Image (tube, rainbow, N blue to C red):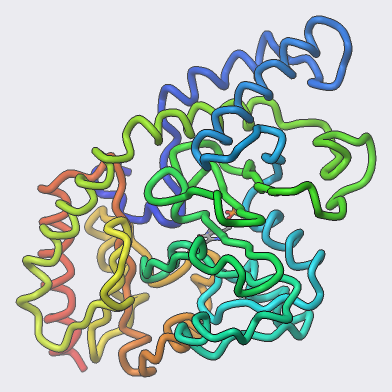
Length: 354
Ligand code: PMP
């Protein structure tokens, strides 16, 4: 795949070569178990602690000990909800919050406005994401302090890109592979140490999440966090520019709408075309060498309309014609223009066929 034509960066990002470079020694010569007392173990643990400091800096956490490594954001999100059987969640959350919330019979806020009401005051926890993974809609969970006893934010699509400051949060969850780190590693921020353990065993991660540490993955996450901080402004304006390039062409298409309201991340563009199927557009684009998505990667393959778009009030006829274009460092204005032209062509062709 030509990386400049990969427009599915909300699903995952390519691992930065500098991240790979720092990870490799921990897959080869530095293979010690981070919990061993000998020097090989201590070498590995030192690298883990450096990564913890880097992730703490990315989140602007007060202390690195507030960061606990996990296998990713899904695990971290499940963990949080399991600990708060009386939680209240927003209706726009990722499936790793939405599904456990449904299974646990948790209360879901009916709409965004309700966040402003003292509805969740009795709740043990209020969980609201920072950036929606399907539409890029921005919320400010940091402003919800005091709306419930504790506030959790899924910052998976925000960390390394936008505001992921945890100052006013009790919990936050992030994932390395969304900001050019490796897959299968993430972290949870725990402000005051209150959270029952997720996995019990050898007592790693302050006894909260046992299991031999994924040293190469954790190292990679730390490096990716550091690079993301350095590049944040450049990455942001790059994404804004690419979004603009795509929109210049898509604005010429009839019966098209951009989803997600007025406050959106520039990294994610959700567009609906009336009278076509998002999945068909994704396959057509793939044939031309472009990668994008028709929704969240985790629910792709399902023909059901997106529940998140549904909760945002997007009608079925628009919902099914939705594609998500998500921008990243490797995309170029030329490839963004190419993708938009290809989409414009496919929409026109598919509409005349029906
Ligand atoms: N939350 C959000 C908002 C996401 O976009 C994702 C990834 N699709 C996750 C959680 C799950 O992260 P992971 O892939 O690390 O399990």
